[in-house]
Image: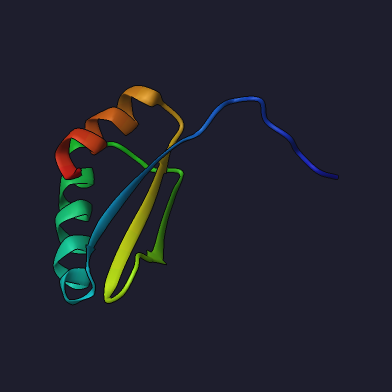
Length: 72
């Protein structure tokens, strides 16, 4: 059985140099813990040459906007 949802999801992409992977992940995790926001998904992706990206998805546009303001 496939469960489909009509609720929209809101994804924010944060791009960083590959060398900043560990620090960026720590900074985002601390911020999420301090704000008590819970992303639906947190993925790492490649962003150009020697870059890394984080795709962080939220159920709420307001939560996504708070995260965007903090990290982009």
